[in-house]
Each structure stands twice: as C-alpha cells, then as structure tokens.
Image 1: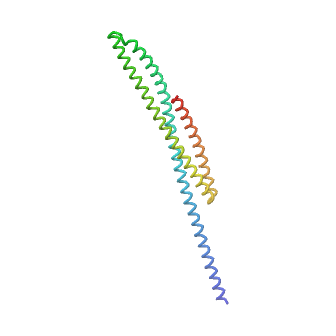
Image 2: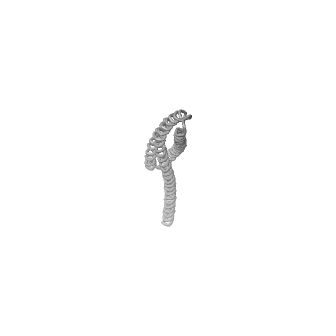
Image 3: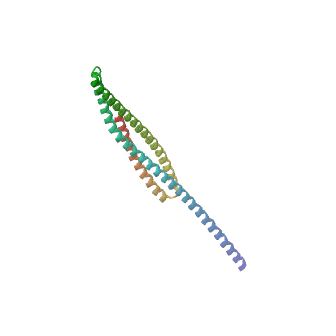
Length: 197
C-alpha cells in the first residue's frame, strides 16, 4: 500500500510539474508576442513622427517661399508700372534727335530689365505652387499613416491596456500636431491665392 501511495504521489508531482512548465511556456509566449507587437507599434509611431517632422519642415519652407513671393509680387507690380511708364516715354521720343534716341535706347534696356523681373516673379510663383502641391500630398500620406497607427493602437490595446493608453497618448499628440500643420498649410494656400490675384 505504501508503494502505491508513493507511486501516486510521484505521478501527481510529475503531472503538476508538467502543468507548471506548460503554463510558464504559454505565459512566456504571450509576453513575447506582446513585446513584439509593442516594438512594431513603437516603430510605426517613430516613422510617423519622422514623417510629421518632414511635413512641418516642408510647410515652413513653403511659408518662407510665400514671404519671398510676396516681396517679388510687389516688385512685379512696380516693374509693370515702370514698363507702362517707359513704353509711353519711348513712344514720345520715337522721332527725337540722336540724343533723344540714346535716351530711348537706355529706356529700352530698362524696359527689358523690368520684363526680366516680371519673369523671375512668375518662376518663383510656380515654385511656390509646386511646394504647396507637395505639402498637400505629404499631408494626405500623413493622414493615411495616422489612420493605420490608430488601427494598430486599437489592436494593441486589446493585448495590453496600459500599453494601449501610452500609445494612444502619442497618437493624440500627433493628431494635434497634424491639425496645426493643416492650419498652416491652409494659411499658405490663402497667401498663394493672393499672389494669383
């Protein structure tokens, strides 16, 4: 009887040890999976932060270009006024003597310079339009990445509530920055509309 009891106790001990081993292995597997998901989500957040920083830099570059274009627009208006003035003076001196003709030639050169200034303004304005279009595309890409990040954050929150809250706070902060980027982009668009008019 003692041998039977000893054998049964040994069997139960082995079964308990095997159960504990399986449980530990399962817990370790779940933890490894959660850590992998956390690392993947963190990498996506880092990528999104880099993209957002790039979008903000592009927006600031567009704002700088818009400020320069505002100055160029004023110069272009002055150049157009000068063109009109010089054209009128050139017509009035068409039948003048040699001295007047030399002055007319000087005015013609000034007229060409004024036209060059107007062309330079047009080139800067086109560049500003291209930068605005690039910023719009970047904003769209950023919004798509943000949606994917939200989906990943929601999935991750099911595996770890605490981890989900941390990542959610990051997402909310990025959403706030994205809103500021959109507002700045809208301001740049309005400024470009002024140049176009």
